[in-house]
Length: 229
Ligand SMILES: *Cc1c(COP(=O)(O)O)cnc(C)c1O
Image (cartoon, rainbow, N blue to C red; front, side):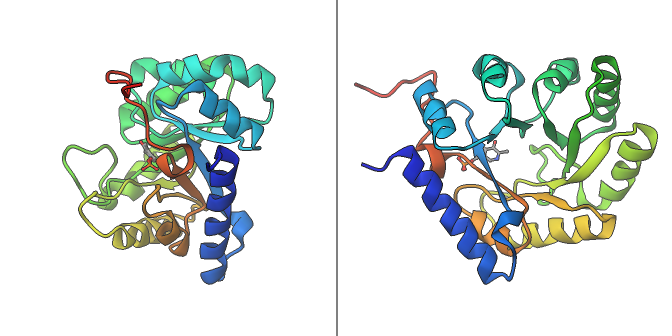
């Protein structure tokens, strides 16, 4: 049976191989373990295996899972990778270390207010809707520069990079290349792209953070429909 420590080790070696093949330093790529909806024992096993960087896509679920663990694991890094409502901005700023999904002026302003109110300064990424899908969050690529200026100049946010989720039915490489190109033009060092099925491609195109859920933890167990015993 493969243990969680084995899957983390195997992911790290695949990330390392993809980085070296692209002439990149494997240490320049961070594995973000996407722990949403995963059961407690898998979270504990990941922590025991040395994993410290986690991604969550809902504020309240992340609070339940991580608020207490934060005290026990001082070197944790929690990254919000899902859509954020402005009324949850303050909770998000209190819990997370990085917000990857800044995608509209109203949210940028709410985050700036929440950071001023809590005295915490979080690194942020702008989510770019590289496929311009109407149902998906993120700024359109042609709006990224103006939005970056609003975030930094008007709101004072520490924008470190860009994040994307390519359309499921398209090859991701073009989307990764587009995101890398945009980040290069804006002089931003962080690129959060690549998930279980395409993280090696993302590393080839310059990902600094790959967000991996199922390939690390196994299939997510639906809270509505638990598997038959
Ligand atoms: C769930 C999720 C992931 C991880 O997806 P897997 O296919 O399980 O690796 C990555 N990024 C975001 C934004 C997600 O919501």
